[in-house]
Image (cartoon, rainbow, N blue to C red; front, side, top):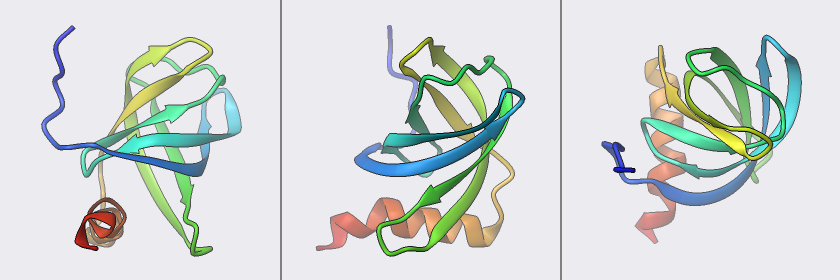
Length: 103
């Protein structure tokens, strides 16, 4: 399988709460980029489904994002491509993704 990612991913473990057609769930993000993320979760999703989620940052603040499920591994997790991000969302995401590299 070829890697179709267009942006570099950052390995990062952060808690996330996500909501989809199957309800509200708690999980964690294991890697993230400006274009998408991988959510490690046992909750069920459908490829093509749009989900909303809240990333819980170690600082106590949160980032609210939305995206489309682009692949799904049952009982393991799923990949999300972000969509419809506001400029504020993009800036918060950039700080999260680029922040660790500045030090």
